Length: 229
Image (cartoon, rainbow, N blue to C red; front, side):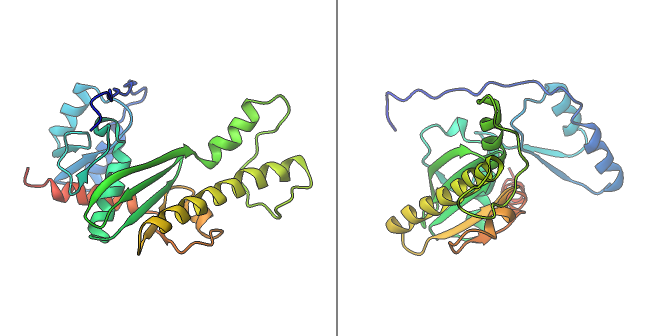
């Protein structure tokens, strides 16, 4: 690790809504719940965490959690819990393979795991909706549009030009990143997940494994992996 590298601590924002109420309903409907895994970018109060711990075994996905892979990320404490879960799902389903996980949500994240189960890192870029919003918020006249598959490459109106620019831009970015990884790593397995995964998978030319539940699989794998801790 670079000795001059200084890790940064993410800003923790307090929750504005009661996060326990919907969980309480789950415990009423499913009384046999024994374990709960918490993965969130928000900060939960100690009172909330204690209340959850009284109901069942609570596992929090953070930088101290036991993981089934070698983490070579330079700033492991800032690695998002969602990315940790996705990597864990990859290890469980495609162990000993070179895997590129693309999570298309609020942001588009790229995470790479080697065939020796080492996590090297990846990339983070704006998601589809974020790009639509940026065009609207950072210009004077461009409208805010709903996500839509472009009908053609050449937009013949402002709206069509925005759809073409945003969606085709994301598609070409993803295909370009996949292509660069394929040049360097043999037998690359590509996984596409996230809220926009299905929307994008229908338009991508690359051979991918689309799984909208990959994050949930990873969280369950982490829960099982830490069961006896």
